[in-house]
Image: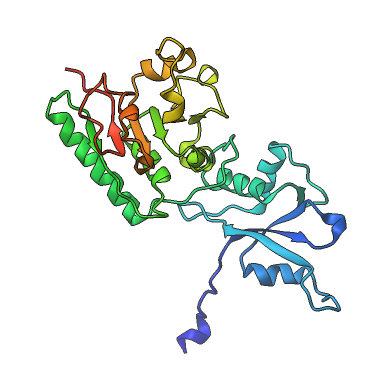
Length: 298
């Protein structure tokens, strides 16, 4: 009897969604809306007449919870406001001329109550195995710092494929308050993976990525975190007299907080590679991948 007088409250799932219409005339436009019911059902309500071929005249491209972390919720009007602020024109109410990534960036700005000025669209968390690797490395570095030794602390991540070492390494640097990170590799093709995680994830807003084909060191804001990516081939290059090339002097004179050796099994421990740092510690580079390069002050 109790259920007849006090029926259970139906579950509501506040959701921000976006879809595109298959009509060529609307190419480049996205409808950004809000619903407390199933997104598919809500969009179907906006297309009561089915096409003769039975195909849906729309495609849902985005659907995420409209809940803040404190349990309150926001609506599509909040997303619209951010999109307009970022310069995306509204076309007929809830339609906007923008991309899915633009919607994602606006959604993150509203959900996290941030400006998200860099339009970052990735916000995934570390997996358990990544958390474990980061925590163990931090513990090791803290223990090494207490030893009061001049030997450089180093830690190897012998990670399996798809482990996500780039993202985890950046999280390590952030958690330890490091702001000058040097990444050296014998495989320059991995540059895109290192730059993508740093420049698109919300956790690293304001961080800068310096590389041969990207931002130059002289253009960076040194008051903000910098990540320099380069190959051993580049930084081992010498001038006609056998000295360091002028363009690479800043790499050798910078006091890096963290040096990461990526894909070292491709040849980073050849004799010519060791020469790059032999003046710092002749036996510190035998078999490491991530190392705390900044010396502890006496």
